[in-house]
Image (cartoon, rainbow, N blue to C red; front, side, top):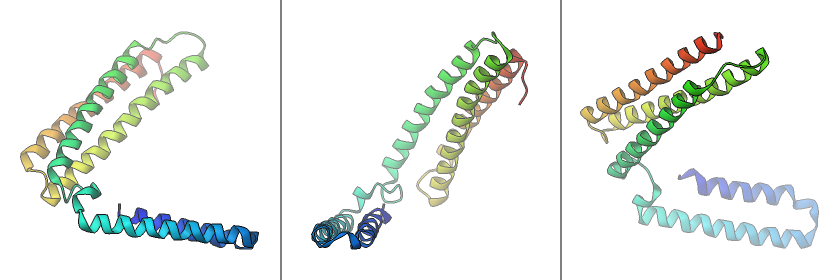
Amino acid sequence: MKKYPYMICSAAVLCALMLAGCGSSHEKELEQQVAQLQKQVQDLQTDAADNPESTGSSESAPASGQEESTDTLDALTEKVQKAVQNADAATASGSLNERISVFFEHKTALDALDRELDALEDDFEAQYRSGSLRYEDFRTRDRKIEDLEESLDDAEDRLENRFALDD
């Protein structure tokens, strides 16, 4: 979050430098835009310094970070259940190309959810290591993620069997 104001300022300066040869009328407009962006960056930095809780950092507000992570886990649980249902409802009919297309459509969705679960698991581990998440909570969430990953793997196996394809 702290990099965001610097990125805005850098982008504004870069735009100003790139358009420097466009003429003097554009130059004044760009200078005004750069000045406005610099003021916004300073305001954001001041706000962040005055109110560190508004930065959204899980380190400065561990309780809200835990709630957000729990909401994310619940949302991913629903997504996994829907993806598994969709994969289980997929039928292997049509030409080989159509079957392959349907197979990979569902497999891609399952793999994407698996990557999301891995990222969430890494986030929980980071929260535990930083001390903002208790070990018991970490293990409970980790087990839930492992169960969801197993559900995705089982759905993928059933999909491979139904479509007679093995990636």
